[in-house]
Image 1 (cartoon, rainbow, N blue to C red):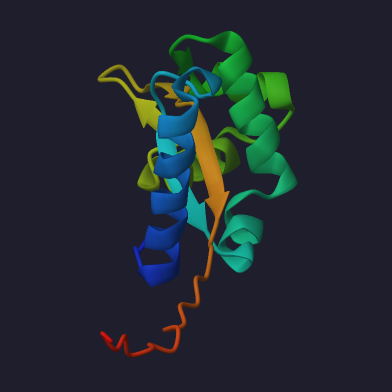
Image 2: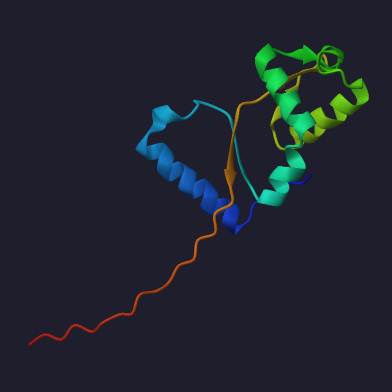
Length: 126
């Protein structure tokens, strides 16, 4: 999956930052910010990947792939494939030993803004 920014994703991110300035304490101090279309979210967040991210967040530390696979009762190769896909959008990261962890994330829906120019009235001085 390739993550590409477009106008609607950018609008979503701008909307998020507007909310952030209103109440910064309501959001995590660090993490990944993704704006995804409905189709992208469905593709990225299948049930197995959601469980994988939840498991990594519960461990809260760098964990070997074999440990994660055993905990999830999945093949190591399949878990590694999902970890690498999630790494492409910065939701997971790997250290030099090959141990993995999840990054906290805020996932935003794409927001489409439609702007209209209001009719302009002439002001006439009398």
